[in-house]
Image (cartoon, rainbow, N blue to C red):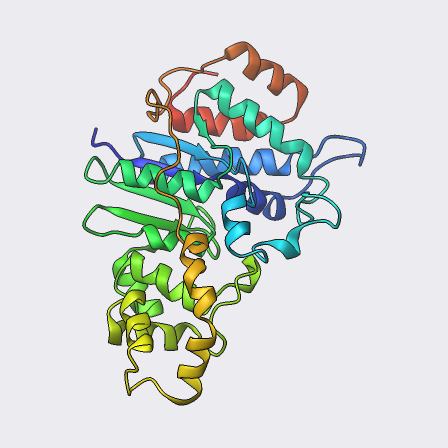
Length: 310
């Protein structure tokens, strides 16, 4: 079997499951299980449809890392509950389900990997980087930020779930980036995103510079460094309001790449196991969970997809 590594942006998927799978509780006092059931079904679908040999559920140990906040204090600041570091967008009925997802991954034997001080995006970026030239990599996410990792030569693509879910994801490769955003590479996408900004993450971008203008500027000057050199060098084709806006954003452009670019050097265990499990890692724990919550059907699907005995 040819190796293919699949990396899950776990929070992106279980949030989607939470909002997309019906809550079938008979009483509000019961534990909700829609995110758990949906997440298991997603794993089954992804394994069946894409046949990875290796799978890692990547985790947000820190959803708002200090190094990004230090660079741009507004980073995800609008998502923080006043007076705390609690993510206010995390639904009350989702919170108690996440520990069960963690326990199920461990019981099944699927590797889950996070790193203190980093987001799942950074873990994914690091694993992509360490597997360049080793095997093809599929990144499964509903977050466009990870388009920056797309690399046709290294066989890295993104299965983008925002529209069609895991059953019909948009396959993002370099041709898709060119068609949708007029950028030729994942690296160019990151630089376009830096110029454009992202209000959902609290990144202001350069005022008046949207996706099309950013892509045009990068195509003209080669990359962000080339654009900034042209600004500093007085390039006569940069003039008027556009020049003024780019000059005014100089301080932002100094620090934004440290926020937009995913880390490629997260500490990863040297003995990290990425291969799909050959057997259930903890049958007793899996049975306890199955006895406690109603997940029989999605668990059966996941076990069948992984070719494991329940």
